[in-house]
Length: 362
Figure 1 (spheres, rainbow, N blue to C red):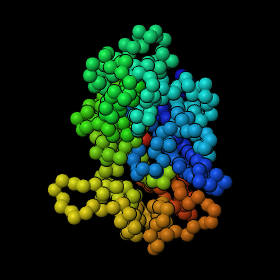
Figure 2: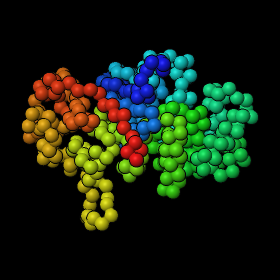
Figure 3: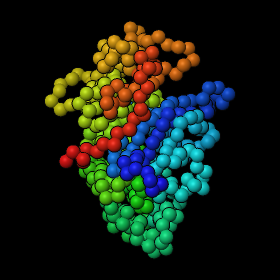
């Protein structure tokens, strides 16, 4: 990062990222579009929560930021991912190795498949430490023990020589978190980091991440399905569906007044204490209701929430062969995925970028 770059500059800027994969059942057929024009921004000491159902492109976006998408069958179709101002998609493998695990680290969703079964836990944590820090094996072992202790693994010195199969699922998840944090990254990509943990350990891990974030100015991309975790830990929320961003806002604004029908569907499908329901509302019921599409500010001007198959009486006029999706700043600091329209063509907006943290309000 250059010296003259302003202090408020973001750590990560994803702009119009599109990633596709070859169709394994029909290699000659159309490619599968996993991410179709995603934009998001993460600032130092900020947590961006990325939410959405399985298969919407959350993990592909995170893995693209570390160039972990296998190519082929994957391909970066367009867009950029700028880390401290430089597009990492233009880096060769040697340059990526210099920042992967050191400056940008990732906590993967499946610890059993991410850990190598034939290497000890200590060797796997120490690998990144020895690669990125000027230390010997003894010092690297001390760093690994400290990282394991930080994430609540009991008797870490003795367990350094254990293998992954000797750990429970929750303990393996903690090992993954220790590996990611061992080199003090400035950007952490956390893909469902507490899925396998019970609620008390989950709270400890999330508190640990918050403390590290404050002391190290670390930015976090938190991928999760748990909206309770989002409400407690996120500063900014990015809601995704079908490889696109459908809503992007400050966490309090999103929870107070969700604008996109899909976001409202997510909230309506959460069971609540004190509410007696025979069955939960499904997302499909919400996005299938035409009235949900008409409450968006500016609907009368032709601002219609984007959806792959909207209700009949809200269907806008579509142009054959044109991408009908546009991410529009519908209110200050509030973006919603909308259908392209003459009104939106005349009101080009900035990409999503919120230098906001809940802690700043305290």
